[in-house]
Length: 398
Image (cartoon, rainbow, N blue to C red):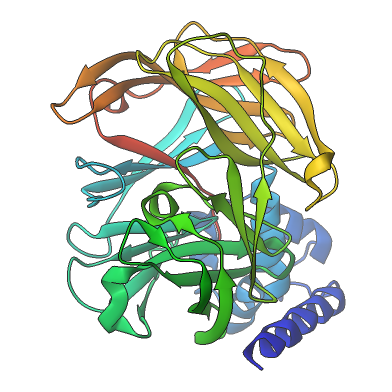
C-alpha cells in the first residue's frame, strides 16, 4: 500500500513537471524561460536570498518543477563539487565529524570555493550521504538528521524500531526522475552481516515525511562494508557492494521494495603482485559501471579498468569499455564528471597511525576518457598532508 503511495506521487510529480513549463516569475521584465535559465546558473546561497522577495517567488523556487530542473542541471555543471569530511577517527566505524566543507573545482582546474559548513550538532556521527543530503546522528538517541549543507536545513527523523538502532544499517538514495530522497533501514545479524531470509526493512520518503515497512528477502552481506560503501542510485535502484572482495553488487529497488544481487566482471589483465582488486560504482553513459583497479599493500600505483553493463541486470552484458594506465602516484576514483572525465584523489605518501596505513592526500586529478589527457587540480594547503579527510560526491540543491 505504501509503495503504491510512492508510485502515485511519482506519477503526480511527472504530471506537475509537464504542466509547469509555462510558469514564470512574477514582476519580471524578462521572458520566463530566460529568467529561469539565469536562476539555474546561480549557486544555492544566492537563490536563498530570492526566497524572501515575495510569496510567489518563494513558491516558484520551491516548486517541484524548478527544484528538479535545478538539481539535474547541477549534475552536468562544468565544475566539480565534493564534500570534504574531517573525521579524525577510523572511517566509517567511528566516524564523528569535526568539520565538513564543500570543495568546488572549476573547469579551469583550480579551486573556486572551499567553504566550511557549520555542523547541525556537536560532533555528529556520519551515517551516509546521497546527492544533496547528508544523514548524521548523535552519539545517543533514536533520531537521525537529514541535513542539506547548501541550505543548512536539517530534518530530525524518529527512526522506527529504535531499540534495534545499533543493529541496523542505513543507506540514502536519490531518484533523479522524481527529485526524491529515500532512506533505507536494514536489519543486520548478530555476526558480521545480514542473514539471508525474510526481514523487515523500512524506507523513508523525504517529501512525504513517511516511513513504510516491508517484509522482503535480503541477500547476505557484510554490514561494515554497507556502512562504508558509497551507494549509487540509478533509475530508482540503490546499489552497493556485498562484501570486502567487492565481487557482488547488492541492489534495492526503492519503488518496489525488492532486493537483488549482480555479479561483477572478473579481470585477469592486472599484473601479478600482493594486492586485491578494489572496485567503485559509477554511472557512465547512463549505465551501471564498475571501476576496477589493483590496490597493493604498499599503495603502489595501479591501472584501472572500467566495465559497463550494457543491459541492466544482465550479467553477460558487462563490457570492458576503458583501460587507464597507472598514474605516477597512488589514486582512488572520486566521480565521473563532464560526461567523459573521471576525477581521482591523488596521494603522495603513506603514514601509519598505529592502526592502519593512511594515504596522504595531495591533489585531485582529472582524466579524459576520450583524449586520455590529464589535468591537475591544486588543493588548498589545509587539505594537504596527513589527515583523516574523506570525500563524498555532492550536488547543490534547494
